[in-house]
Image 1 (tube, one colour):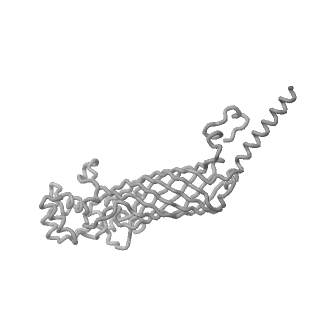
Image 2 (cartoon, rainbow, N blue to C red):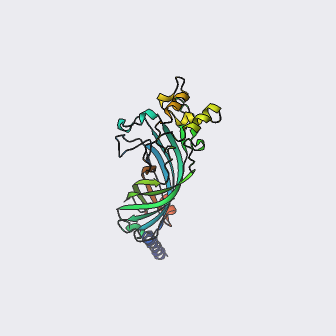
Length: 311
């Protein structure tokens, strides 16, 4: 009887040990990932490439579902929350933007479908993933578009949505198409997890992420003045023209001076061919959804914890 029990115990132990290594032979096509990092906006209120304006970062966070569908290919469905902002001061003096005294911020949501191509093969058994693996990616997505500005520049709580005001008499959409693309790098932390770092630039089809496009207000300043004088919507003029040279001592627009100037008050950059965009850098982790991850990683098997420990 003792010999029989010993044999049964040894066979059971060998079977459990074999199963513990057999689990690593499975391909794990599904994974989830998350990351955080800085965001940099590019548009009428910020130009990194043309002028020396430093870095003015905001923030973003994302969560994604991933699926391996080819030897080097992975699909990604990603959700991102991000903030972008810009303002004239401090700007490069060569840009001649400071006299406008404009600013904005936007807090948006983005959803995107992305395809990743990896340098090393990724359609492998879970345990044989490469230690490091660079990749490139591209995709298409949709983002909300909600620029805001302070109605009272001295009050940080008086942020108002700019899109309903149509400051340039040119309505634009609440949702915009974005084209994410960039480079990334992954490092294998353990059987179930990778560390990832990537840079992602979004091209867009709008010049109104910052609510500014026209070079000056000459084409619509009469409408702004009329709404201000008649009291129909006076905040349009207050938000469109912040240049101190065209304000009274009490901070209100100098209507007569604006009329005398015939609207030659600078607003945009004059680059009619350029759309707005934003760049994100993210550091995060990717977790592969192995069939035994909950038993042997998150909720360890307490009975065989000392003998079969997998992380």
